[in-house]
Image 1: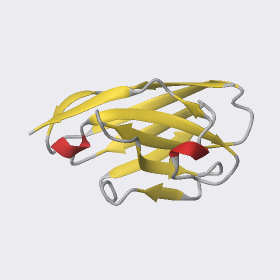
Image 2 (image 1 turned 45 degrees about the vertical axis):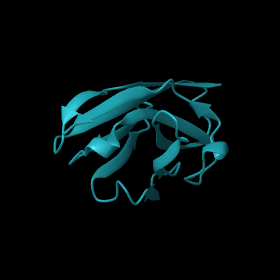
Image 3 (image 1 turned 90 degrees about the vertical axis):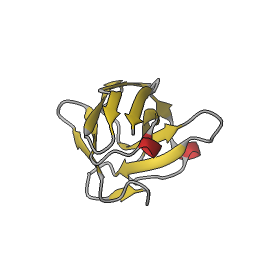
Image 4 (image 1 turned 120 degrees about the vertical axis):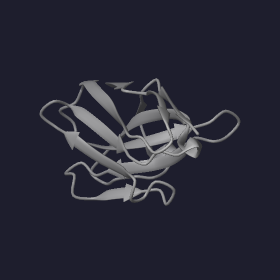
Length: 124
């Protein structure tokens, strides 16, 4: 089992930046790729970005490409999401997720563990 806990959310104005963190605990010695997803009420959870186990491959949704950056610190068991030039449409609950294996994945069903989610609100 792996437990994930997000932090760093909050309320910001459009154009500002925010960094989300995700702390992993439990069986972190296994190989996991990691990702960030987001969800707004009434809609499906959507892919934001993912990073492979080794960290060499990163994928981004078109809506965030060029503005968001994913990174991780394996020694600290931490995953990060740097969000720049935020827009009101980025408002959502953001989830950290872990998927067994090496490959970065973009599909919700391919992830095995999820954090509880954290609210990000961008005002116009």
